[in-house]
Length: 130
Image 1 (tube, rainbow, N blue to C red):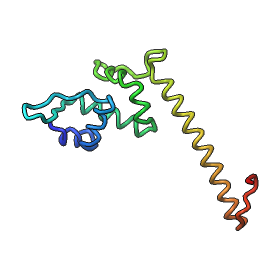
Image 2: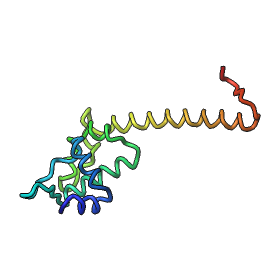
Image 3: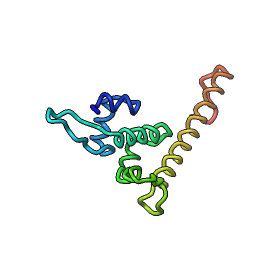
Image 4: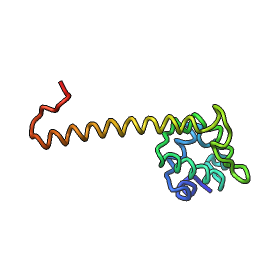
């Protein structure tokens, strides 16, 4: 299938497919004699997996660091990305992303508390700032 059809099947855009290819998350697809990209069900499944991982908070850089593990999705049955221990597993990437999210939640909670105090007092003087 052509790039537009593959993108639609994966729930994304042709631009996203080209971006994933540029970043190494998607292998360069075969080309027609006229040079158009052709994708199969395997590529569509991989793009869906990429989108699912991005939707739970991982970043493109997180995925790029473990792009070689995406080949496990092609096995029958698919192997879980974190199944193997050691530095090759996704677990360290997920742990680092969880820590970053926790830090951001703490920062935003603190910011929210400061704004709530400002709203309650009507003053620009926020306790603890100075």
